[in-house]
Image (cartoon, rainbow, N blue to C red):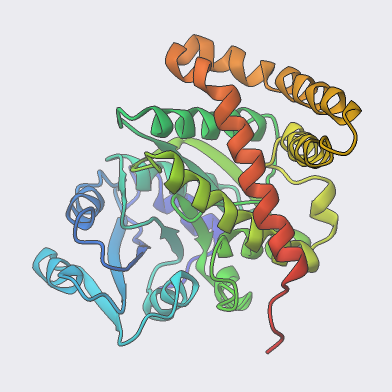
Length: 342
C-alpha cells in the first residue's frame, strides 16, 4: 500500500496533480437487499478528483437474504461474516482489508451524493484534521421521517458553530486510516452508537475532528412513531453505557442540544408527579407546570420547523415529548443494567 504524508495528500486532492491517493469506502450490511443496490450505485458513481483511486468494501454481517449476491453483481470487494457479529465488527473487518489512506464509512441504507467522496476528503488537506463528518438528507414523504430530518438539521446548526467536534456518525464518516488502526477501530462490545464511543475516545486522545456539511448522503429515516421510539430507546440505553467511560460528556458534547437534557428531566418529572396525583391532587398542578415548561423549551425547534415544514411544526411538541420519553427510558435502563464486563 502506498502511504502518504499530509503534504502528499494535499497534492493528491488537487485536481491538477497526478499523485495517486487511495480512498476506501466501507459499508456494513445486514439483510440490506432493499436499499443496497442504490447505495452501491451511488458509491460507484462518485465524481473523483484527479489522482484519487477508490475501493468499495461491502461487509456482509451474516445476511440471510440476497445481500451477498448484490455485492458480487456490483463488483465491489466483499467481506463475509458467517454469523451476525454487529456493525462495529463489520466495520473493523472492512478496515482490516482496506488499502486506503483515508477511510470513509457509510451505511447500506444511504445513497451518497456524487461529490460525497470529494467533499469528505477535502478537510484532510489540513494535516491537523484526523476525522470528519458529513450530513443526512432525505426525500421521504412521511411526517415522522420529515421530523427526523429537521431534528438532524437542528443538530447541524449546533455543529457548524464549532471549529472541532467530538462525534462522527458513521453514516457519513471519514478518518485517517493509520489513526483508526492505531486506535483499535470500533469497540465490538458496543452494539449500538458504536461510532459515538469511538468519537469520544479519539477526542479524549486529542485528535481533531471537523464538520463537513457539504458531504451529503440521502437516507431512509424512521418513518413511523413506533420505529422512531424504539430507536431512541436503544440510543438511550447505549448512551448510558458510553457515559460510564466518558463521564465528562454527560455535561456537554458537540452534537447534543443542551435543551434535550432539560426536556428529558421535565418529561420524567411530569410523569412522576402524575403517578402520585391520585394520592396528592396538587400533583396535577405540578404536572401541568412541568408540561408547560416542556412546551416552552420546544419553541426554538418549532420556530425552525415552521419555516421548513408547517405540518411537522404542529406535530413537533408531541414528537419531541416522545423523543425525550424514549431516550429517558433507554438511559434509565442503561443505568440499572450495565454491560457485563468481559
